[in-house]
Length: 160
Image (tube, rainbow, N blue to C red; front, side, top):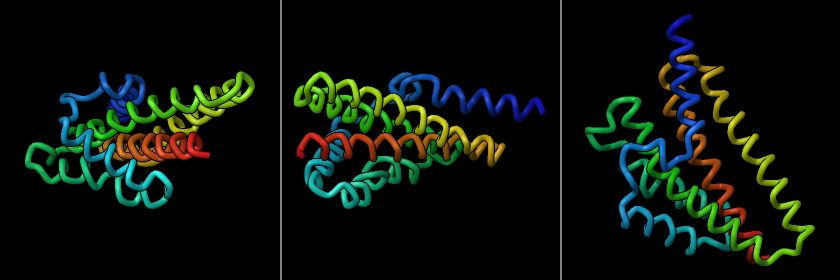
């Protein structure tokens, strides 16, 4: 029981802090550029952007390094990519807001709040279901994937 509570606290910390505060290293300029360039290349096709850009450029190569062999090391790889997508999401959100009227902006904010609740409840469910240390890295991967998907979608909305 105590172990489950400790793991629950660990995963809560993964999602309680903003991505930038949760990581042990910052993304490199090359990692940021790789994801930004990929997202731009596939900006007209959200599904293809997800297939090509999410995990393939930062998290997966990172997890193959010796220092990422632990659950926490793997989690950190996902957190590094999460930061990149979170920054892109925030930029895309602000850009989209500039193109909308007041009523549309209110609906966009409501949509984002609902999405954040969805992302958090979905990604935190790994702890409920798995109840083990693997849930931490799986939850971090989930948050990265969902944030990337959202960043790509907001950019797509801005093009409409």
